[in-house]
Every structure is written in C-alpha cells, then in structure tokens.
Amino acid sequence: MTVDVLTHDEETASATPEAPAVATDEATTVTESASTSSEDASSDDSASAEPAAEEAPKPKRGRPKGAATASTAKKTRTVELILTVTGTADGEWQAELKNGSKWVAKGLEIPAAAVSRAAKELHSDLSGPIDEVINQAREAQAAKVAALEAELEKAKQALAELDA
Image 1 (tube, rainbow, N blue to C red):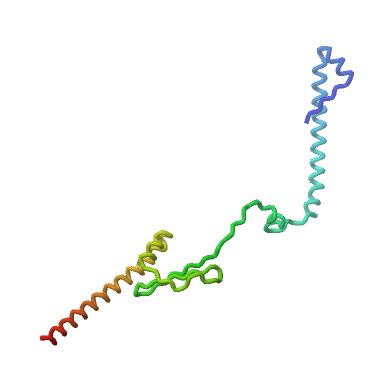
Image 2 (cartoon, rainbow, N blue to C red):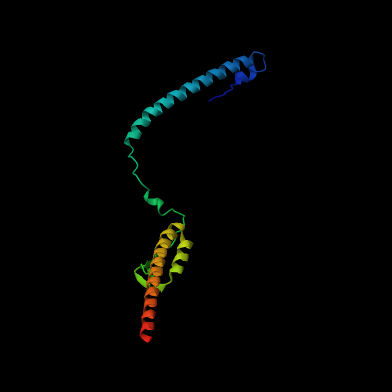
C-alpha cells in the first residue's frame, strides 16, 4: 500500500532540483509505516478471528433446507407401467400389463416371434436369453412333431393292414 501525501512545503520544494529525492524518501517512509501497520492489523485480526471461528457452530451435513425450494429443475412425472411376459417350455407366451396397481391387460396370448422381435428392439442383453428359451421351445416342438409323425405313420400302416 502506498500513500502519497504532499504538504504545502513539499509543493514549493518540488521546484528545486533536490525536491524529488526528499519526496521519494518521505514516500518510502510513509509506505513502510503503512505496511507495518497493516501487518500489525492482520496479526491482530488473526488473533481475534480464531476465537470467533471456535464459537461458530459447525455446518450440518447434507443439503440445506432452503435449497429444495430454490431448485429451477423441471420436475418430470414418471409413469409406472409393468409389462410381464411369461413363456412356457412349449413356446406359449402371455403378456400382462399393469399401470400402478390397476391391471390394464391380463393373460394376452402373444406369438413367440413377437416376443423375440420386441426383445431385440429393447436391448441385446434381453434378446439373448429370450432367444435361447424360444430356441429350446422350438427344438422341443420339432421333436414332438417328429414323434407324432412317426406315430401317425405307424397308425397308417396298422390301418392298411386292417383293410387288406
């Protein structure tokens, strides 16, 4: 901090060539005394600040209570829809839809291909396990068809023997 104070004597002395030297010495003296007084004041402030810091209560954890009302964020309305898709080993699939606590649809039969397409559209993590279940059901149905065709062939042969 620098303080330049000119008195009437200094203004008249500035006309002489020696005046700047005198003014510089006085300015230095004023600057040193000002910095010394500011250091004394800051040491006094730090001594008085410590007891004040000890007396102040510690801030509580978490959000301040007024912050919730000052929020400018838009509140988004959420809708709770629960879609349950169940399948059997035979490949029969059903869907149920619930809105909150109210049933919207219950026991709707849906094709396995639609379940597979929907799972692929939603996420690859969903489509993998669902496709495995559908493939297992497809293999089981193919085995059942093969067994029934074999049984049908035997029945046709038995009927042919009876007619002969």
